[in-house]
Structures are given as C-alpha cells and as structure tokens.
Amino acid sequence: DTGVSQNPRHKITKRGQNVTFRCDPISEHNRLYWYRQTLGQGPEFLTYFQNEAQLEKSRLLSDRFSAERPKGSFSTLEIQRTEQGDSAMYLCASSFAGVNYGYTFGSGTRLTVV
Amino acid sequence: GQQVMQIPQYQHVQEGEDFTTYCNSSTTLSNIQWYKQRPGGHPVFLIQLVKSGEVKKQKRLTFQFGEAKKNSSLHITATQTTDVGTYFCAGPTGGYNKLIFGAGTRLAVHP
Image (cartoon, rainbow over all chains, first blue to last red; front, side, top):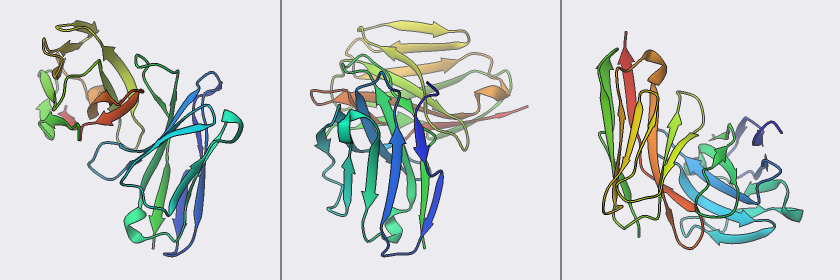
C-alpha cells in the first residue's frame, strides 16, 4: 500500500464547469475524510465517510458539492458550477475508526477556477 | 461551534534556537493531534496526546497536553532547517474522529 492517492494533482477549470476529484485511501482504513485548505489556513472539514456511509457534511458546503464512496473503497468529490471561491487545495485523508487514530493525508488536488 | 486557535501565526528563528507553538481549544478535548506540513506538501501526522498533563518527546520535539485538556504546546529544541514548515494542532469534535484544525504556526529557520 502506497498511502493515500489523489487524482488529479492539479486542475484548472473555467467558472461554471463541473469538476470531479478522486481519492484512494489506505485499504485497511474504513474512515475517509475530505478537507479544503486555502493559503495560510488549516484544513477545513468538508465531509467524511465510514465505509460507504456518509456520516456528516459541513454546513459550509453548498449543494454544489457532493461526495460518494461506493462500496467503501475509493471516494469522489464533485463540484458543480464551479466558482472562483472554490479555488483551493482539496485534501483527502483516511484513518482507522475510533477517536485515537491520526489521519494519513494524500498529496491533495489543487483546483484553480479561472 | 468548537474552535482551535494557535499562536503565533508565524515565527522565524536562527538555526539552533528553540521554538514553541501554542494551541488552545474552546472546549475540552478527548485528545489532541499535531501535524506538520512542509512547504508545498500535505499535513503529516506527528503525534497524539490523550491524557491530562501528558508529555511526549520525539527527538528534539516535546509535546504537552494541558491539565484541563483544552490547551497544548509543541516545543522544538535547537531548530534545524529541516524543521521548516507549518505545524497544526487538531482536536476531535462530535461523536466521531472528525478533526478541527487550527490555522497553524509557520516556522522559518534561518541558517
């Protein structure tokens, strides 16, 4: 297992277009998290899954954002009708279930909306 | 909602000097985690503290968890250029291990 993998690494899109990112977590981990990070800030929670169930979605997340984790394996994060304010680094992380485990982050997908 | 605050936002030191960053939570935490993010990189898990008053060391890094489990600190002794990066603390919220991150302390080390 090579850790958490995210694709693509970079994405430039025009405002109004839809984009989809993929995350492949560590196979033994049943928790998967999506975070967003802007310059000079800490990661901001978006949503997370335990196996295939989406447990929580941030109130900050508009209806343009949706995430899935079919079969409890990889996950996708889709942003519809992108806006310039969506430009950020989108980080995926995975962990074992329970409150005493650290996250393993992927390298992230950097989204630029022009 | 729960907030995690870190100070300072930025610190630059001469190589060999010590460095400390502080983390404060608005609520009592079951545990606190520390992460390091190198420039251009992603956050990497360093350590977790669980017990009140706990102190853990990793080589030149010393982590403390406050008695009230609302604050924590990271101290680096004799900084090296390899210590450059942003250090984040994070605490769980809710019934699951959903972490709330602080804004981080960016450390610059001048040789």
